[in-house]
Image (tube, rainbow, N blue to C red; front, side, top):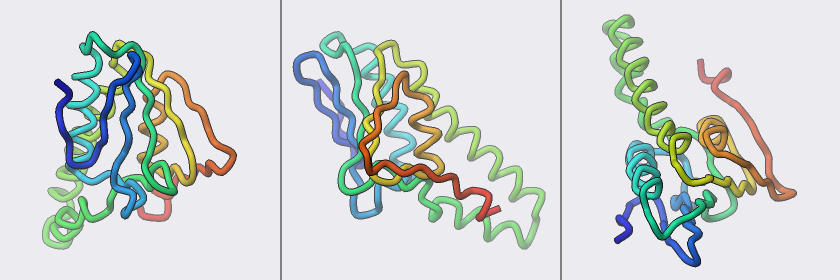
Length: 149
């Protein structure tokens, strides 16, 4: 039985698993539940006997707006009182998030990214973990982290 998720829509039909980022009202920005659910989802699909391939897409107008910056609000607040501890907390958070995406890379089934609209920052990291990437004509890629830091 396919697990249910808050931020992902998952189905398997004719041996094709379809994983859809499902936060269209937020341009599929990757909040903490999505990061965690991506890992659980791809670990499940890696072993799912009824899936032979996985297609990853985004609901709505955009594939993925990248990291939901609200996730880091607490870390930025701590930076004023102790910048070194805040930097280490941010580093540990980023390492955990990278581990979540590694589940896509380690999936034993081929993972195909179907990209449309905007694919920003963390979304580019996500599709880089896929085996193949297919883009619609309207796909646009951007890495904005340099503007944040």
